[in-house]
Length: 65
Image (cartoon, rainbow, N blue to C red; front, side, top):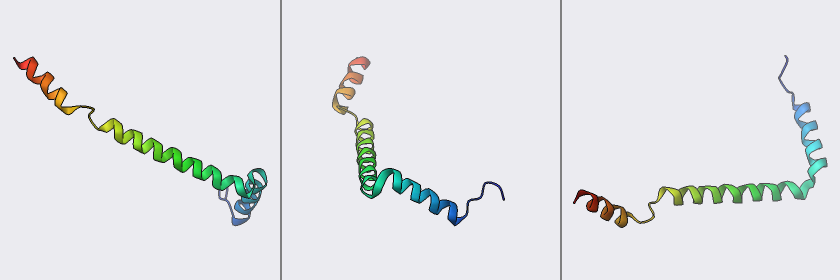
């Protein structure tokens, strides 16, 4: 079957990745990725919050007058 990988293919890929990056490099890469995701989520949460909702309400009231 073309395109299907056996367990041996995945073992060889894993060995090559470990040889290229080493055992210590992979956990540090994953930790950096997790920090980036957390930072992205916190920044997205900050963007959803209005900066000053009272000011927006006052602006809308002034326009009505």
